[in-house]
Amino acid sequence: MVEWVESHGKHLEIMWDDGIVLHTHLRMSGSWHLYRVGERWRKPNEQMRVVIEVPDWVAVCFNAPTVETYREFDRHRHPGFGRLGPDLCTAPDHELLESARRIAEYPDPDLPICEVLLDQHVACGVGNVYRSEILWACELSPFAPVGTLEPADCVQVINAATRMLRANLQPMYRATAPDVPGGMAVYGRNGQRCARCGDTVQVRRVGEHARTLYWCGGCQVRHQPAVEPPHGPPEREMDPHPAAAKYLADLPWRRDSLAG
Image (cartoon, rainbow, N blue to C red; front, side, top):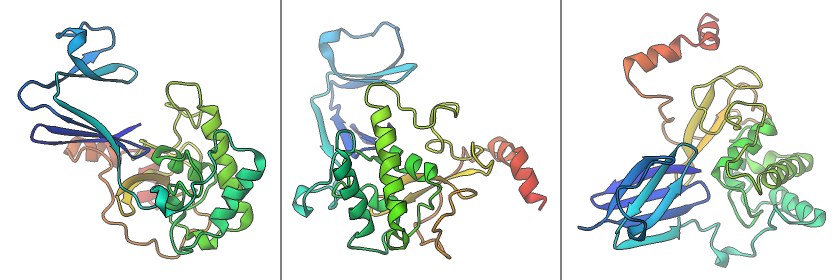
């Protein structure tokens, strides 16, 4: 899942939910083109350096002198931080229990579970998309200090993560909640109605690297702290245009909540 795109002059950075960043420097010869699927490219194939495909669009980078990928720095992901956790896509049952134990005995008990799930030394395979979906499936508050979780909660989290990751090994486009339109329960659905309780899905940047987190404040209340830790201002739910603000205000479940 592409999470954000930033440009700095002729430098362009595209970041995926698993921390991989694609960096291109166009200089004088490079260019990015956007095409509909099946549309003919305006430059020959041999000049192509990068292709990114999503269901309806294809982004193509031509002739860029610099094309490289790297992983966003995160001390928890660095191999020197300790032995990596089991790969949830392939790990046997006893290794899954080991991942649950690593959550239960996490060295920083005050760290919220939403951050612990991204620690590859707990388990490998959980990226930013999956952490939001996993916590929704478990009805856990993403801000719950990991030290407040019961052992059964830790097992539930790992089981949910394993189920989602293995169900999406083959499909090109992820679906963590097949019964929800679009296949995602909360990720990318900020401002929309929660499929389980009808409350509004929220989004916020959290953690050292300000990764986007989606959750439902109406039903993800298990182990919710009395006061959520400050993580900076919440993300805008939609375009700040007055028409968008009116649309949000007129949502039926919002009108009901405002009316008390």
